Image (cartoon, rainbow, N blue to C red; front, side):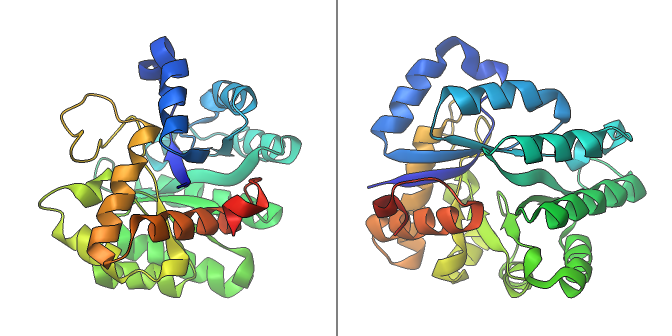
Length: 267
């Protein structure tokens, strides 16, 4: 059984002491590809190094909404330059809106829309961070979808929305990615959303080192090997086999991100 973890943060200091062992565990768990997300251009060098150190890692470049205040005239240039120069860049992000921890609304909108423009120009998918801002993110993406059509595509990462909100983004052509939160006992809305997403739009992730899934929730650090617990929970909620979830989410990840796996992995 092969899996793809579509959202990791392995460049964090938490992983530096034992990254080789972490990699061995994700290989043993059947993780054949990982997409490393980015929160700020200051991370570009460390993420790029990891992607070229480990063949199974691809990466995204972008600015997280909680870092919107750090945006300057050089940021867009840096994102575009690396995305154009390194074939291991498969997406722009993570980007979006976060009104849970910040209220710099106007600045977040500007940064979000500027990155959407970069992704559209480069024909790359986007990784969307959306917290307490689903109606606003929907509005922005609807506008871009109307203007750009099929060229705007991407994933709602670490999704925590209601089924109604989930349908908004499915209607916009987006993939929906579930993390360890779907395994939490009281995550009823997330679980209901996971049950109703169409199979061809479903993705899985860890968002490590955050949000370790049950039964690893007590651990201080999440890691890619635990994405299997997310797949197992989706299988239960959707009344499917884990193997079917693994096959479908791997195929979906290959399609969205253009991952360079073997033909047997992606079909």
